[in-house]
Image (cartoon, rainbow, N blue to C red; front, side, top):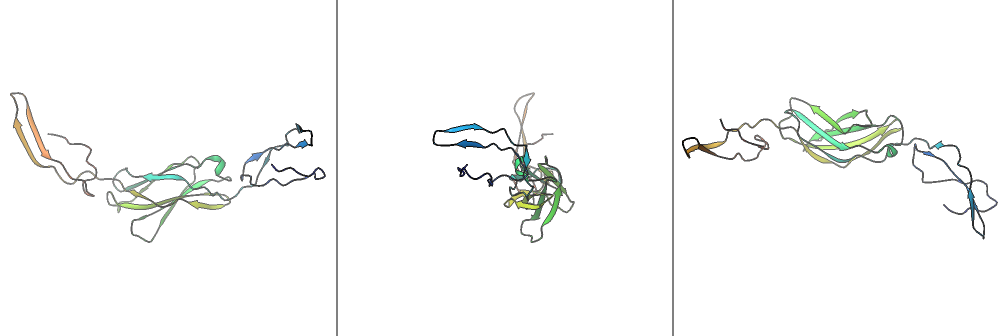
Length: 192
């Protein structure tokens, strides 16, 4: 803090965070040194303000068919700037001009699931997540690309063949399925 003239009995403290409780002490100083601090003032909470910090780590994906799962890192309490804090989720199919908006009125929330039968598997969406409180809407995150949920593979493996190895063993082989929007990420195969 800056040193205040000895004839001044009042000061304005700046650059405080909104909606945070503070207590203050005053210390007298002279050419010899610094004295003992005063007793702390009563706690004083600064006024609320629109939140200015957007959520981070916007991602998602997974989920079931016809779902868009969006996740984010929640905003810390000291950055919420007021009561009535929540999240604004905005998303649109990649290439679309119209945003869909949803509100999650929970401080602890870190996930939103949008369900719609018209969503095709593994469709890319542009996603932004913002914040709001009783003072108004705050900052939105930058755009992230999130893919909708997958469907079960629609293509069967090709070229299945079997080779007898012994009286009790058969070796089965096939051509792997290449990744695409209709197959999704193949996590494994089942031999029947």
